[in-house]
Amino acid sequence: MTPAVTTVVVAVAFAMAAWSLVLAARNKLPGRLTLGGLAVVELALLVQLAVAIVLLAQGHQVPQFWTFLGYLVASLIVVPVGAVWALSERTRWSSVVLAVACVVVPILVLRLNQIWGGSA
Image 1 (cartoon, helix red, strand yellow):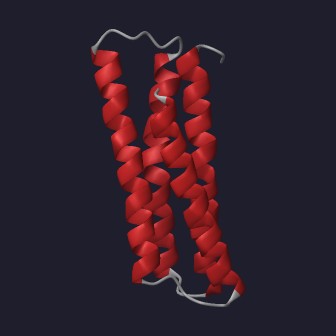
Image 2 (image 1 turned 45 degrees about the vertical axis):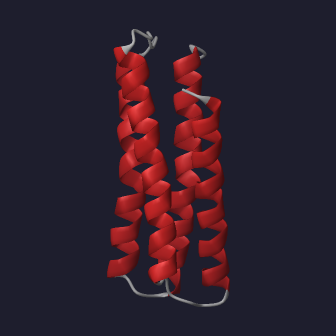
């Protein structure tokens, strides 16, 4: 994986996690701005997916391919699942759910980079 993509994904996800925690602390529900920020996180993850596909198509070997694929898919799923959960439960805790989902993303991405680099 490229360091630039990783940095952007991690930064955007942590920024959205912080924003969601601010909303939770202020007892506010996630609104359109929050959903837009989540869309940016998901877009960054889709860019990461595209980069991974291109690099794999160019012949890059990943030591644990199936584990890598599992983390890649999980990173794409966690934000939409968190958003659906947050929108179905319209309480202060919906912002906390989004914050947790956004903190999970950098963990998955950093693990992806470990697997990519061969240090499983």
